Length: 176
Image (tube, rainbow, N blue to C red; front, side, top):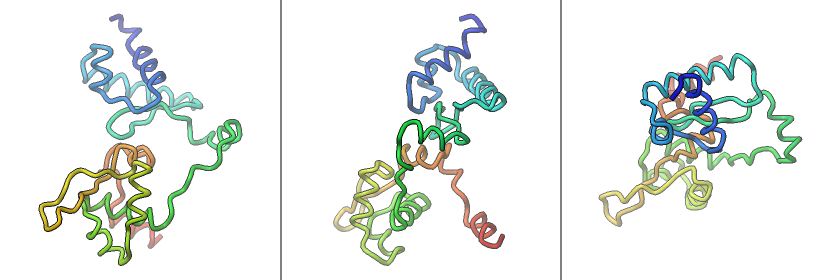
C-alpha cells in the first residue's frame, strides 16, 4: 500500500466503526504491521489535537475511537437535542469504584465494604454494562464474581485500569 494512503485508511476505519477499534482489528482490515499502526495512530491523534478539530481520536479501552471534542459538548448537546449524559447515583459510583479497584469481587464483599445491600445497584450496573459477571468464586454457594467492562473504560474515558487514580492521588486532591 502506498505510504500516503495508510493514515487515511486507518482514519476511515475509525470513522465507520463508531466504536473503539483495537490494533489487531486494524491489522486484520489493513494488513499493516502492528508497530506501524501504532505509530500512524499516534500521528493522527497529534494531527487532530493540533488542528483543534471538532472530532478527536482518543485512546480508550485498549483501542482507538473517534469522539467529539469535549470543548464543543455544550453545542453538540443543543444540536442533537440530547439531555445531559445520564449520571450515575452516588451508591452506583461507590459500588463501581469498589469493584474497579478490587476486582474480581463478589456481591457480599461489596456489601461488606459499603455496609448496605447492593442488589439494586449491581443490577443497574449490569444493565448499563459497566460491570459483568466473569465466573463463580470457589466458595460456599459459588457466588458470582464481578469485574468492570470495556464500557466502563469508555464511560470514564480511560485507556485501561492503570489510569485510575491511586489513593495517594486522591489524598493530594483533598489536601489541595
